[in-house]
Image 1: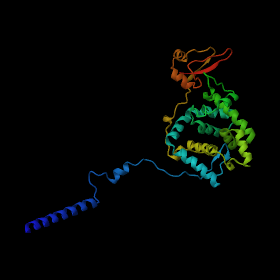
Image 2: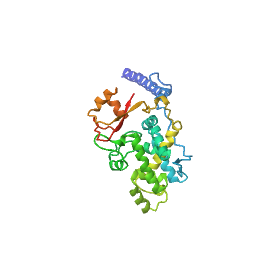
Image 3: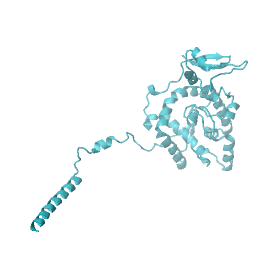
Image 4: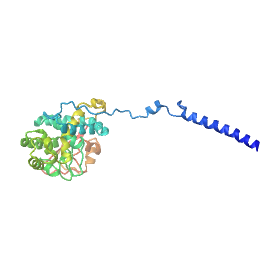
Length: 309
């Protein structure tokens, strides 16, 4: 029995010592060589700085002020600035695309007497892409079929001039100037473009709104003008929002082409492209308004087709 007790005592001593040693290792602040250090953990952090947006202003649209001294206006603009400033993929794409689309849009706006800021309406509408909405609006300016046709755009199974940048921009200018003749304020014009003049007039009258900022309507139109101003602010000053896109990264403006007048029907645009020394794909890139594999030309009609050189 005495030997048994002695053995138990020695065992307890060793057990106690082992527990103390284990506790010491757990509490030891010195990192183990196999454990990631604080520096290594820091290296895993995303390399970005997330902060609020400077709302000092001034902010304007087509020469007309955005009254950010009104807290409601200020907060609504802030939301759109934050939404687009931190929508990284989309904003980078806009910065790259603007060099392809803006020169043509800016030239036509100037020729038509429409303020340059209206080009940002196209950015808000389509992201500067030949997009198609779920409602069926198409092109950079997002015309619905009836509206496009009413402003002179040809739309059928082979040709859709909503995708023709020059013609669609001319049509948009007419549309915008018609609204300006009614409202005499480009901020109201933007809202009318988004929701339609008759609908806007109904709510404007019903709510007795004297400015666009007094309206309380659907969320899309409520945010629309602020989205345009936010996109304008970011695209004009990308570095202020952390975007660094070199000129080499911008998409080309597609100015390297010759124009061919087509007065006869083309049964196969693929064959036509090959005969012109290009590809079907490149023909469609330069002429997105050609929406099928053929082009029917009626008697007395003709089309101007761009062929890359």
